[in-house]
Amino acid sequence: MTTDIPFPEQPRDDRHLIFGLLSLSLLTFIMQFGMVSVALGQLTDDLAAPLRWSGWVLTIFMVGQVIAMPVAGRLAERFGARLVFSGGLAIFAAASLVCALAPNVYVLIAARIAQGAAGGGLMPAGVSLIGEAYGVGRPRAIGFFSSLIPFGAVLGPVVGGVIVDEVGWRWTFGLSVPMGLAGCVAGFALLPVGHRRPLQRIDVLGVVLIALTVIALVFALTELGRRDATPDYRLISAAAGVFVISLVILVLHEVRTPAPVVDLDLLRRWEFASSNALAFCFGIAWIGVTSLIPLFAQSVYEMSAGESGALIGPRSAVMVVASGFATWALPRTGLRKPLAFGLVGSALMIGLLGRGLHDPEILGLTISSFWWSLVVIGAAGAFFGLANPSMNNAALELAPDRIAAITGLRGMFSSLGGAIGIAIGVLIASRASDTGAGLQLAFMVFAVVLAASALFVLGVPEMGSAQRSPTPDGEAVEPVVAQGRVA
Image 1 (cartoon, rainbow, N blue to C red):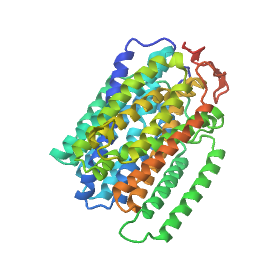
Image 2 (image 1 turned 180 degrees about the vertical axis):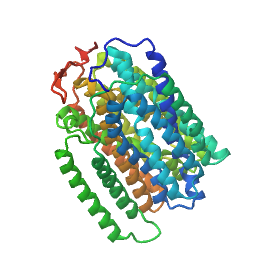
Image 3 (image 1 turned 30 degrees about the vertical axis):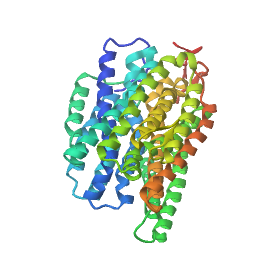
Image 4 (image 1 turned 90 degrees about the vertical axis):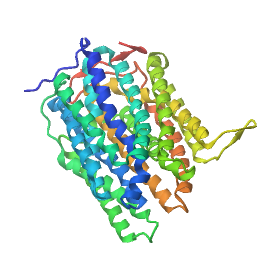
């Protein structure tokens, strides 16, 4: 039997234990993505896979998250966030084992979509559990939760680079198996069940249509990226047709179904639409760039897997510090200022990186390509770290009892953008004269997209400006944050 009560306003005594367990478990998932991006070059050679298909190892992971995130939010509301979080870790561990043993790129791709789908529920379920555990202190707790996530991006590429150089790419997946299982067992033992709402039907057809739409689009981009032969434009046209038709059917279905997977109540208001559009553009640009930085470094600067992984680690460490500072300052700065400043600054740094400068000379001092890339990538991470807490908290106060659903939907748009961004980057790299030159052009495109996304900041509501927002059952919900301070 389920209940439909608002989150408690009093924090739990074990909230810090819950926060620590959720953070460490989520790091396992984040580390996996960072390790695979470093291993992409070696697994492409080892499995004799064309770049356009090995790129699916990154892209399909994002597709899995696109499928899972809105569903995970609904499942967390229906069955409790603990089951979604811990169960997701169990499936993630099993899929990681299949990835480690994959005999070819196609089996690896199939296991990767399972990995992404299993891990896609961790963020909405984790945010829901933190929201319940911290009561009125949830905005800062959620901000710190998002600020700690980059630790996985610090460890993933660094650890992954060492593993790839020493024992091979398969062990980047093998490491996730025991870590995922340990988090699963601890989650079922220590986490609360989680806030639950009345039973709602899961929109299975909507999930299938979302998957079909995204996969058709990515397949069309993949076929366009053929370097060894002329692309088959019949296949491309067919995939594009499937994309358009499935998208139209998806929209019509979501309007008519009583329990849509894409909750239209969380899209109709301008504040929610702006936040989701911002997440989508962020996914295209930021996830696209960060996923391809190791391949960029290996192609443009001929760095090893270990060196390319070392480039990403400091960037993520700087993100942690910047996000922590931005979270602490949220009641004073509001959401819009750090969000706009961070997005534009990140775009400038990505554009500078895309120039591919070799051993540049600045004020008479020659800087090696490695250190130059390290500084530019680190600066991009610092700028984005300033924007990240605002992006994670945007519009949450409009409906604080729908945190899991809002976070899941926003994560879906971010992952959707990431899947498209990676596919676009691989397409440009595959069609260019060489991979390095193509990635430089792709980074320039990503910089423009990220800078343009700052326009959506105008639609993000400031802290304390939320009006009472009706929930689907008709009850109004008071905003969590008032007058620029955490309530």
